[in-house]
Image 1 (cartoon, rainbow, N blue to C red):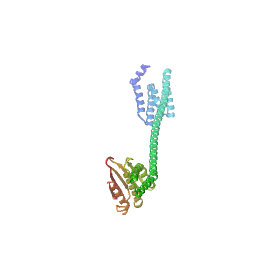
Image 2 (image 1 turned 90 degrees about the vertical axis):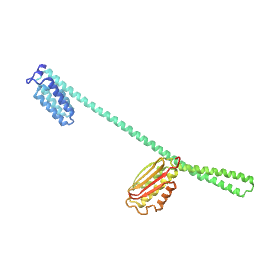
Image 3 (image 1 turned 60 degrees about the vertical axis):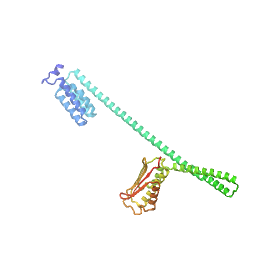
Image 4 (image 1 turned 120 degrees about the horizontal axis):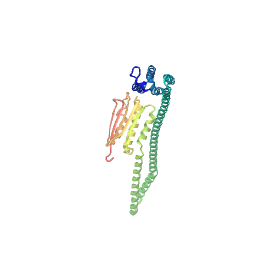
Amino acid sequence: MLSVLIFTNEGFFIPVVVLLTGFSFSLLCQISDNKKIKIIILSAYIILAFIRKEFVIVYPIIFYEIAQTRIKSFIAVTALAGIALCIGKETSEAVVIISAMCIASALQVKSYKYANLSNELIEIRDSGTELKYILETKNRDLIDSQNYEINLATLRERNRIAREIHDNVGHLLTRSILQIGAMLAINKDENERLMLEGIKTTLDNAMTNIRESVHNLHDESIDLINAVNECITPLKSKYEINTSIEIDRNADANVKICIITIIKEAMSNIVKHSNCTKVDISVQEHPAFYKMIIHDNGTDIKSDNSSSGMGITGMIERVERLGGIIRITNEDGFRIFVTIPKKKGV
């Protein structure tokens, strides 16, 4: 059999040539991603095998590539072609070739199932990773929302306590101080006057401490982000409002009150005087100062929306009271630019 393969009629179709040709056609099929080109290459080899029967030896390798096309009609036709090529061969050779074709087909089915299983595993892994990321993101959002609600509730409670102290204890102390003052006015006994003055001094100190505590509680309860959102939320249906607030929540209360007041006045002016559709609000904290920019894209700025208006004058006075600078322009929409220096030690 080997001598037949090595020495054919023309003398050049040796096993090496047959093997190299079969592997070359198989490699071409693997390189090409176009199914039509693969079919042409495989069909060419089948024709070559019918022309030169020696090429049927590596037909199982080609049949593996044929099975990979997943085209049932093409697989059936080429399988019949392989059987036809075995006609005239010795029985043992035909059995080996057909058996090898069956093995190639089975291997291809297994490879296909393995590839599908690998893809499914990759999809499951990717889905799991994506789900884990989504859950982590939702977890963070939930924690942030919970922390915000807790902080907001704490600030409201501080406000309530400050209000109750001011309305109840503050009024009682004020009444006591007035009563002591009246007693001092009518009492002539020096010893009693000294005692009453001592009591009045103590009550005055208590009143001062309570007033400072109430102010501190109120100042700490100012939530700048929440206050700004309350200002702009009613207007979001009419305007596109973008906010960027990067400031410490423990910033000076006077600064926060000034920022809130200016934003309220600016939004009021926009509603009354501007034909804008978009408003950008930026509040940033720097090492030595606070910066705020309010800018809208209005093109029809009315004359009373200038520094001479009462609202604008109020803005200027508030900023200057804190030692800051305010600049108002209407060259490219209406823009308010504010800088407020930080207190020393802040």
